[in-house]
Amino acid sequence: MKFVKLDHQVLLSLKEQGYNVLTSVNTVDDDNPTYMPQKVGNLWDYLEGVPSVPMQERALLVIDDAMQNIREEDLKGSVWV
Image (cartoon, rainbow, N blue to C red; front, top):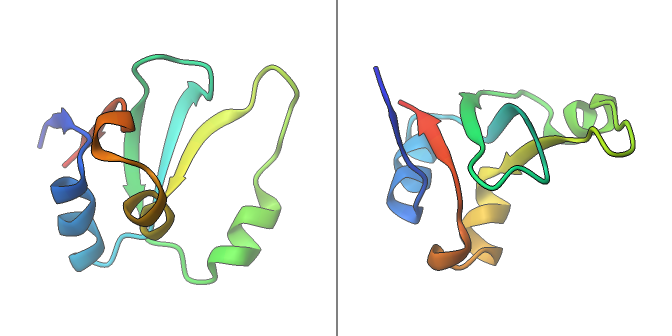
């Protein structure tokens, strides 16, 4: 396993493997976050339970949302695959 640059093809591959969320220990302000793919049963319950601390909010991507709403050139970071 290794970190690879985040792009739409990687997101599609992860989605096909059943992953639906990318989580990170980096904050949303990080210019190069690293992500770990997660398989979450109830996405909305999961998102409601994610703590949000001002100025320390962790980077998190919902794979479907990222594929539909983030342009390729705007994706940043890498993901563990």
